[in-house]
Length: 164
Image (cartoon, rainbow, N blue to C red; front, top):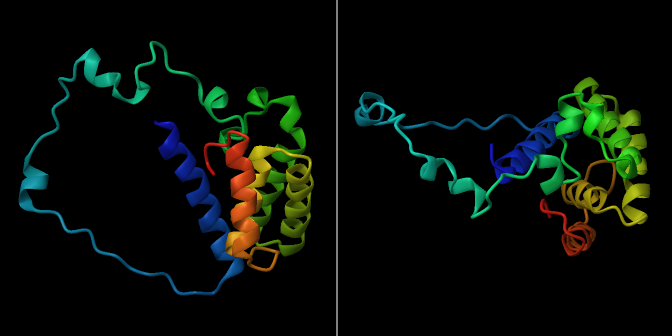
């Protein structure tokens, strides 16, 4: 799985949980339109080594997700604390609370988690700044504020956060 798809999955999962907690908008339906050709053409599994390297962008060995994106949600979602950077302990603690709050619909726990993420972001943690950009953009436990959202994402991006 590529890093960009992993990161978008992280934010998509978070968005889905928070939208369930935050809004009462009805779900929007969509239709996938496949042609008969899509179903009748088989998958060619005869790829070469060159084809499998296309996601590595010229690197000899692929880097682990944790090295590419230190703020990845993967340890939280997979319940794997062994890969958590000790410098990001507060951030990951807050993320776990956010996921728990979203899955339980617990608004007060969400507010507590966002306060912790905000403290980490204020201390200059790029992954936390990215999350706060998302929080301000969505208006979750904070008033929606496009300017603050942009500022948080900008700070995170300047410090190397790939999600911002």
